[in-house]
Structure formats: C-alpha cells, structure tokens
Image (cartoon, rainbow, N blue to C red; front, side):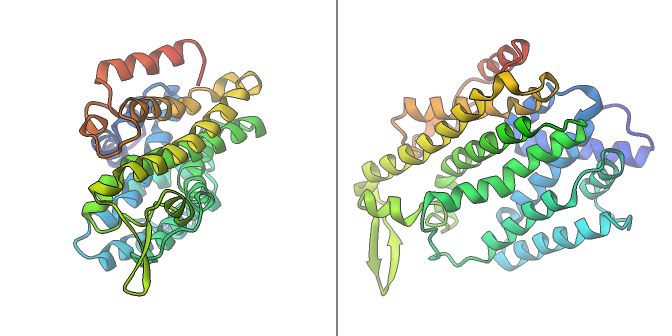
Length: 304
C-alpha cells in the first residue's frame, strides 16, 4: 500500500495490511474493494480488530491475554491525547484518528466488549442468542461504523445496514470458531443456554451447568448452529432490504455481507455441522477464486 506520509507511517500501515491478510483474509479481500482514500484507514481499523480479537488466542496464559486487551483499552485513550505509542497498529490507528476524525466511543466499546468476554469464567454460559447479538454489535458493527466514518459517510440508513451486517458477521464467525474454542476449553462460551437446553445439550454436572459436545450430541449441536445461522441470515436480509436507500459511496464498506453469505451457504452444504472439515477449506469453505469472484460480482453490481 503506497502513500501515508513518513516512512514510519508507511511501515505501520504495511504492518496493518499484512496482519489483516494473514489473520482475516476474507475481510482483507473486502477492503481491497474500498476507494483508495479510505482503504488505509480501513486497514488500520481492521488491524486493531485483529490485535484485540487474537489477544486471548495467542496468549499462553489467559491473564496475559487480558493484560493485552487492557493495554489496548489504555492505548485508545492515549491516542486521543496524541501520546506516542510504540506499536505499528497503534501508530496507524493514531494516523486514522487524526486524518478521519474516528470516534473514540466505538473503538472503546469494541475493546471493552472483548475485555468483558475475557473476564468470564469458562462455565459462564450466555443465556440467550441476544447476548451473542450484542457482542457481535459491539465488536463487529462498531468496526463498520468507524469505517463508514473514515470515508466521510454520514447516513443513518448505512449505519442501520452496517448494524445488521455486523451482527450477522459476528454470529457466523463465532459459529465457525466453535471447533477452535473447543480445543481451548472455551466451547461453552458462545452457545446460549436457552438453545442448548432446547436441543438437549444442557446438562448439570458437579453442581454446574455444562454443554455436551460429544459424538452423541452432534445432531443437537447442528440444530443449535442452524438456529444461530438463521438469526444471522435474518440480519443479512434486513440489511439488504435497505440497499435501495443506502448511499452508493457506502456500499463498498457493506461488502462485508459477502463473507457472511458465503459462510452461511457453506454451513448449509454440510448440514450446519461446524466440525465438518470442508468449512475450514479455502476461504470460508469455498475455493479462493470463487470467493473473489462472488466479491467482485457484488462490487461490480453495486450490491452488498
């Protein structure tokens, strides 16, 4: 990515691009469809999301992961007082804040939601899918709000569509990550108790509620995934109902709907079995070239 002023800033922005490409590839491809003038800020914002989303995963000890999130919480406040921070993603974010007047509240909401999530105990099961929707809104929709802001786009309708797309995206990515969280003993975190009980997965063991995820419970888990995917699909449809009223300049930001659709289609093909290895292949379960074709098709047609 060219431009961006000084060599240190160019280096920071290059770091952001690589982080997004390495750890959030489908959204990396989405950001390439943005106009040049907002692309750099979008990569800075998305790299911030990568750093905070991975904080708990890369830490050998959950306390260290939590410390990283708390560091980012403090870093955001420092960035708005123009205090220098020796971290490339923070440096790029500082530039984006300065150049595009990025709002602090949405950045704060995102990292604070991840802190609350990190502080929960393993057996602290969310009660309902509404809790997952709230988490998706705070961690994903806020990112889209900031990206719209970076493009100088002020539209209530675009924000409304971004809210639905963010919720849909957050929900399906939580589903995709369920197998990974199982290996980290966090498999209960993102399966709501009400849905688990509805499909026979909620049991009481040792005086506390647990969610069964063995071979005998696979059908029940698929039913849970179907229910959550259905809510995500409903949000996607609501966003697309607004397409006629969304300003054209906002539509490239809302292309994040494409990964949601692709993953929903991939889940449907494997009967909503998130443990099916086909989900992890390619880009969200489809060959990379097919994903890029779908993305370009939506972009060319001015759709999302």
